Image (cartoon, rainbow, N blue to C red; front, top):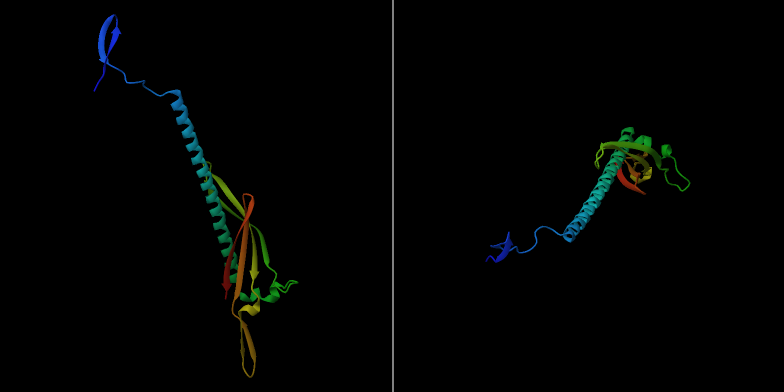
Length: 176
């Protein structure tokens, strides 16, 4: 149903539909809409920052896994004889001395963010090798005693700096 109102136009009475209310937005509505959009924008920016940190953390962990696997493969190619107790040395506590490998660098070209840049991570690795008697088989006959070391266990701990903390992983392998 349309309401009709009387309006004066140039001293003549004209009948036309009445306006139901004001048209357009008021300043209060505009300010509330801007505040809501501002909160949404800040939430999206916070989400993007968290995603960037997660991406960098994952890249760092993937690089550490690669470093650890490269160390295990390299020691495996040297052979089990090079990892004997005599070659590794025994510390004062009777345990084998761990092998420290500092400052292994990995660099990725990437774009976590708007600007493309290189990501460089410095890793420090520590390799612990099991003792010979942990993987030893002894065979005895009437004529001789034979002992054979058939494997060595390697535990490679790789650590790196991420933000204000030290991250680390441990990868284990067996050399036969």
